[in-house]
Image (cartoon, rainbow, N blue to C red):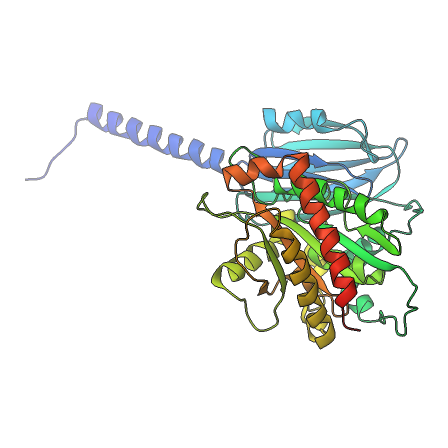
Amino acid sequence: MKKTFSPTKRLLVKGIIATCLLSVTRVGFAAAMAQVIAVRIWPSSTYTRITLESNVILKYKHFSLTNPNRIVIDINNIDLNPTLKNISSKVLKHDPYIKLIRVVQRDPKTVRIVIELKQGVKPNTFTLSPIAKFKHRLVMDLYPSKPASSKDDDPLLALLEEYKKGDLNKKQSEIKSPTNKNKNAPVIVVLDPGHGGEDPGAIGYNKTREKDIVLQIARRTYNLLKKEPNIKVYMTRNEDVFIPLKVRVAKARSLHADLFISIHADAFANRSVGGSSVFALSTSGASSSAASYLAQTQNEADQIGGVSRSGDKYLDNTILDLVQKTTLNNGVLLGNAILNRMKRINKLHKPSLEKAGFAVLKAPDIPSVLVETAFISNITEEKKLKTASFQNQVSKSIVDGIKDYLKRRKN
């Protein structure tokens, strides 16, 4: 039997359908509008990074203006929410590049961000896909138009410029290792505090950040090495700034380093796991599944810290192909020397030197090791890592290990 509806019922049904369609349209519109969920500004003497993290990819355009110098970013299809409105409070007084930031809702679908500058800059803007805990990110790096000359002739800014252009590996392949080095020439050591800036590294139960701890340990190690006769020491970073892995290696090679030591603080899902470790480079697979996992997570630093795709024009395997047997052997000697010292101040995670394919250890002509000082994920070791006494012990162990190695190294 066919059912019929009265005019009143038909109007009621139409009203329900219209309401449903309206709600769907509103939901769809809301979902389409981008939402900024976090704003971060990382100032440093090298460059300042601005990061806008959002639920979807941000559509934007930017341009520069003068009198005063400023950069304007227009972001489409977005509301000026409290998170984005708070961007002005993120600017620090000591930021060498940003004077202030203003943000306004230019029209119902466009937010305008105006960055007033303290000096001329070259902006590098790019987007990053979600990784780890991060969602979509819009990144703007502000580099100085005229880099200030450094009393230490630090090549970092020039290397970052080469990396941005995709020229880094090509230029690095042109560097020739010093031959017949004077026996009385100082030993050049480069310390590499892992992570930095947008990349916090591992985070402990009590929110201790790996990037902060390893920078403190590296500074202590630097100060000890400066006191040693015939040793010259540099750091890949001496502030809270993100440096791509390849640039860290390139800086060591540009300085003609004799040794490269990367400093980290390990993490694992099981908080009971602890102990110190030292790693050398492996070109044929990791020495354990844990070493393989650690290398994989550390090699993701560029994706987490955020690098523009322009830095990937040249393949990374050119440096790895150049690795020399003597360099690898000396890396093992150095690693064992430091490990032997580390076991006197903390239990070892593994009793022997481990090996894995860490990208940061791939300098072809520099013996390189990665020191995992302790597990920051272990509550007891996290507490130790924060103390000056343990940091000093780690620093002294690294320095004593270097001195032991220099007595035994193979030329």
